[in-house]
Image 1 (cartoon, rainbow, N blue to C red):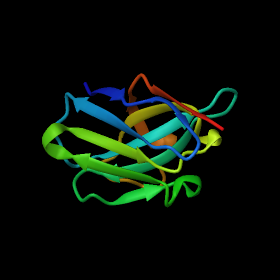
Image 2 (cartoon, rainbow, N blue to C red):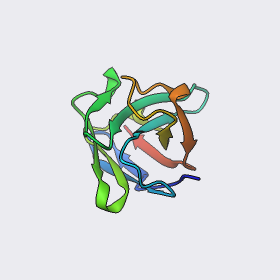
Image 3 (cartoon, rainbow, N blue to C red):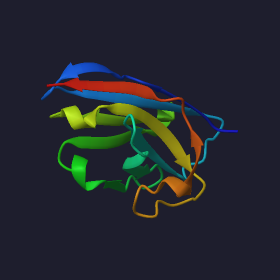
Length: 126
């Protein structure tokens, strides 16, 4: 059973930065895709970025390209989401997830992910 614990959320002003962390336990396989999703109040959960922990290939949703960076530290079973130039519309609960699949199918696509963390809140004020 995979367990995921996110941290690093908080409140910042527009233009600021935050770095989210997600520690995974229960799975040592490098043949997997991990991702970050977010859900704002009253909106559907959306994919933000994903990374294949075996080869490091990444993908981003268009709204965060050039501002967010997903990375990994396999020795620590941890992925990160560096968020720069934050905007009020980035305000959401951010979730870490592990895919059912052994590869990243572009995306991230929510239906590909079966293990979820509890989330960490990010609030960006204008």
